[in-house]
Image (cartoon, one colour):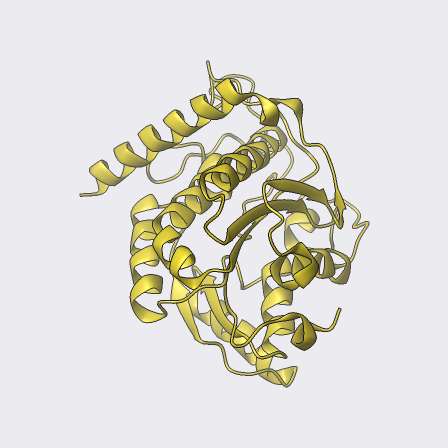
Length: 284
């Protein structure tokens, strides 16, 4: 796909988790076009490394870098404030940052806020960041939100959403990814007619990333495979106005049936708002 031809004048793209894997690939690729790329990470040295990779590819300088640990929801709050104040315009928000399955047999992990870690980083952080940045996205419209999810999805047990029983890293990861899709559907409905679209995609299966290698899986796809599919959702003009969809790479697909359950999505919304409110209150 030709990035330059597909973009409008001066698009501004915020990528979370831009220091590794898919996020880094997107940052480097978008830098070779007329795009203001905003890089998020939690380590400045790794952000600087991504910037160097952009330069090595002949790309333009990023619009800026922003630091935040997405496991801490107060830092997500600060991240949203900083992005709105420093940049003021976002035509695409890519919620890419994630924690993988973890090493085989690793124990259940909690965020510093006391919330199951994968639910926090993979879902709640992107949920909260997106909602906080909605005023910026609306004024920047046409704009897009792209949620990077997975074909591996498991339903949320609302009697034990934090997986205190029967925990595995795989289950936690897959539950968080379905939560992202459920949020995608609800937010797309909420933003209908605003010029802001919201879609989710599984970029590719078992890309050659540190997340996959940590699980000792054999990669089945390249970063180019997943990157091109994700790039399409960010910039392809053929997707103007397309919203509330889940894609398996470039093909529209049906997510887990729980995503279509209106009551389950309402339960997820209420749980999310409650967890975020408690975390932010505890951080004050």
